[in-house]
Length: 134
Picture: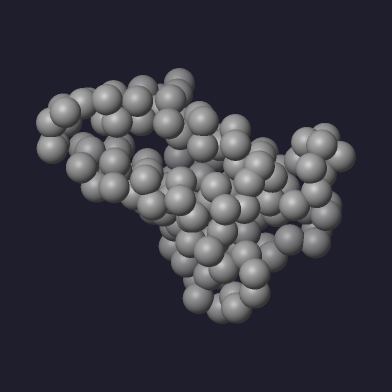
């Protein structure tokens, strides 16, 4: 699929996400998710949770970020390694790197700040570039 074949809300959410406007990405993707009844419904739910995870992390809610990271990973792994133009294995790996301090801390409320250079971005790729058509 090229970008013109995706729902405009999907693409708008990606633009917000890559601009680190995670709450806005979540809002747009949630609207898409609410309207969508097809096989990618849980995929969109996973993206919403990735955005909310990073929103929480950026606001210091590390407990909430850790919880959403786990559930987002569960949703998205079912679609991996590639789905709807996104290399999910890469996105999840980058998300785990970004959230490593949260994941590794034994504290319920880790005092860890997000490192801007580690925040993942989403780049759409055609299936041929990933070696998988999913």
